[in-house]
Amino acid sequence: MLAVRYILRRFAGLVAYVGLAAWAIGTVLMFWSENAELFQRFGALGVAASVLFFSNRLATIEQGRQKSVEKILHEFGIELTALKQGTPPTEIPKQGYSVDYLTEERNFDSLRQKADMFNFLNVLLLTVATLQWGFGDRWVNVLLICGVGQC
Image 1 (tube, rainbow, N blue to C red):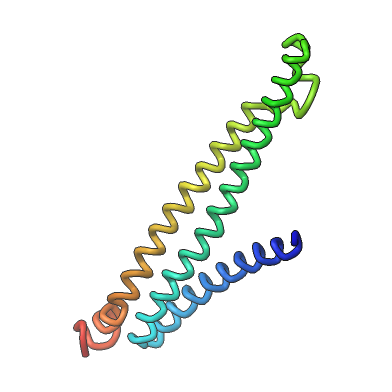
Image 2: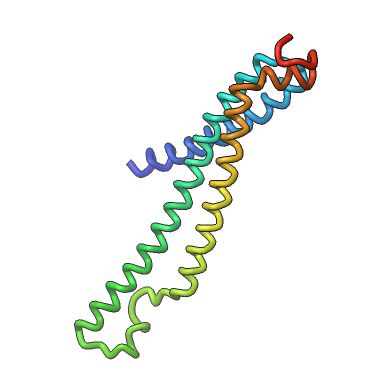
């Protein structure tokens, strides 16, 4: 079961990267070859790639956050158990994980920054790909082929 989960997680990441690359390469090639219809259709692939790629990235960030929270909760549990058993508070860090809370807080800040950057890129890619999907043929016609929206 663990191997299947590992393979599926890796497969999702691979599909996300392949979709993003296919959208980028296909968009450039169709724009360069002045193919308005296929340029527009690659917008749909861009929307799908955005959903796949960024949901995969954000899931990875969430797993990192959960790992940090679990470490902190485990440490609190060890400290509480030690206090209940009568261990003096000055000796508690000698037992358990001995988590550095400041390091974990920096990890949370790093994860927040990554999540913010991925959210920004997701909104950017979704906007561009959606506009490409809706109006891509018009863009190619106006910019490259005939100078007006419909030739």
